[in-house]
Image (cartoon, rainbow, N blue to C red; front, side):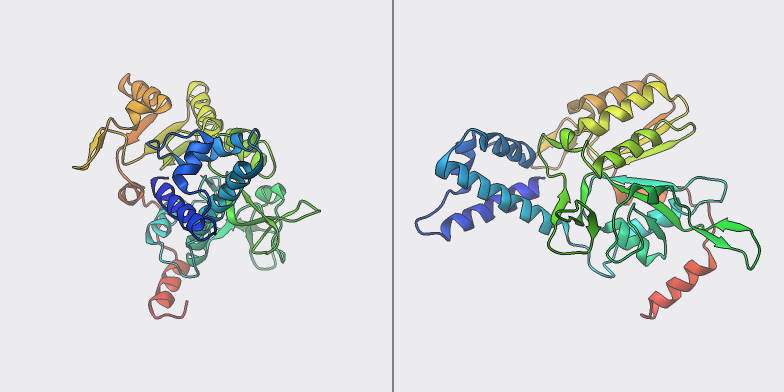
Length: 338
């Protein structure tokens, strides 16, 4: 979020300087919506802008509306960085360790608030079937019923079916850079042009938007998943700042005694990088503080890891042996024909 603050501020200043007479620069915009300049929080700023649009009039309102459009467009560009064959070794290794499961186990479910396509591309490179709620048509169209379908392999001409091993479910809780809502049908498609982006942008209205489709389906699946018996929840890079996601987790911890949770973040404990320091997320976030207290009190279901995604992946148990298909794909990729 800090990077977005700097990038969007520079874009706003550039856009203001490009007009004659000069438009509203970033500092002037902060003043017009009442956002303190020292608080570099793009989510709080976007929230103030939406609020300001409801009471400003004339030119000030137009400037705020233009800024919101500029910021949202930049967020889409900044998160749309995954290209074909984009190197994603950490995501690929995580899927190799976690997504390949025996037939007796349910499919791994990945819930992400990120807009990018890292898991889709890592899944494609690893020859996984990624079940994301979209149809296998052109264009792919969202329908939550696809999450209930299973991908199986038929054994010859018999009536026996085996679930394929390389498959996982992907729930993008805040939308994706490649989703568009088509008008007037309201259908949500992928890889199409002309529709409206389907994203929950960073602002305090995220909770209300989460009750619209397709987010409602995703949130519902998440709430169901954390209440399943004998389930494990791995939380990586989520700061517990979104109440509509943090509250279901805390509720499940209180009621689901068979659930185990591992929280991974490089800033859980107090940090000091030489130029700046902080108390750590376990001190500043009420939900993480509660989890830390429960773990310290002896709740063996809760584990907190003060590290990043890259450092965490090697600790994921590598239980399933590498398949012939995976070895074959790796060989093809090494010689550049995969």
